[in-house]
Image (cartoon, rainbow, N blue to C red; front, side, top):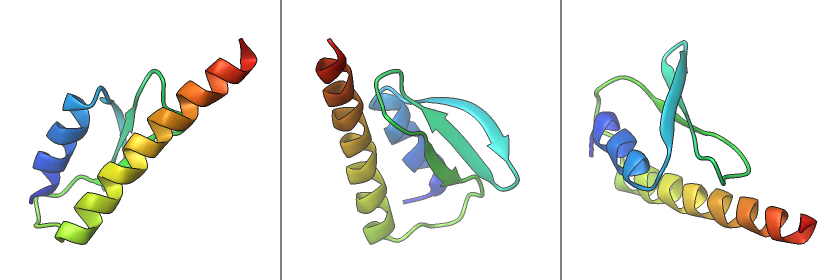
Length: 72
């Protein structure tokens, strides 16, 4: 999978691109506890890195929702 495809997958999950810092894209989600950082070049990314990034993104969303529920 290319980095651009990973960014599109994160965007389908609800993340949106906010800025670029050097060679990395920073994506944020309104409910996530932390931003996701993805390399912005168009090289192939290994399947393990892709799956770990998607799992981290899902965990960040779940953590953010849990934090909001605990405050309420």
